[in-house]
Length: 270
DNA sequence: TGCCAGGCTGATA
DNA sequence: TATCAGCCTGGC
Image (cartoon, rainbow, N blue to C red; front, side, top):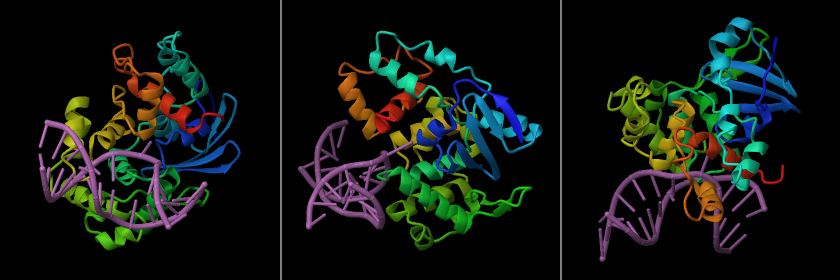
């Protein structure tokens, strides 16, 4: 167990921001987080954050994962003070971080996300991890499941994926996994691409459109210029930015602003 | 009962 | 090129 003082970090806001579907609320202010084949418990009181891992594991993995090397004050300071809506949204969501998650995990997760609710996306991801992922144990004996590799999902049947409640998205996950395995799209290549190239490359995968591609770039490649527009964001833009969102002003950090807006729209009174 | 949820594909004009 | 139905399924 290690303890850190961290500003502009809220594990509960990150949980509700809808970018990670492998976080479980264990108790008030205490969350279990699974990423790739790792697991950590995070508990928070104010700026005091406890991680149930060694200092080495924190530095090697979780510090980057939670984007804790970044000072989010610089993003918050860029917000137009005349823009009351975004200023309020950012103030309320100022503990959100853009996580640095695994590319393959984000591809599958956001394929599943379409026409779906956050609660159901969580269940679907949990189902495929439990059915196809490897069972792991923490040093304390806590059991969790690693995210299944492309090879495993490529060899699954559409029926097996449907049994995980993926519905019509099953064929998207299956064909995308097969495209990765047969080399049509290289995950390593995507990781080294610019945002525009990565976005275009991901669009080659069956079931991935503009919105899903932007989400993957934002949450896996940390392309902060990505600005995924879903139904919530579209409604917010129509209401608060009838003349268009000022992308120029927030060039290169639109993704952070998108998260503040998304959080505000989903949790307007929390 | 019907609509909608963090969209996308494929058919049609 | 643009438009639109159809798709899984659970919650309201």
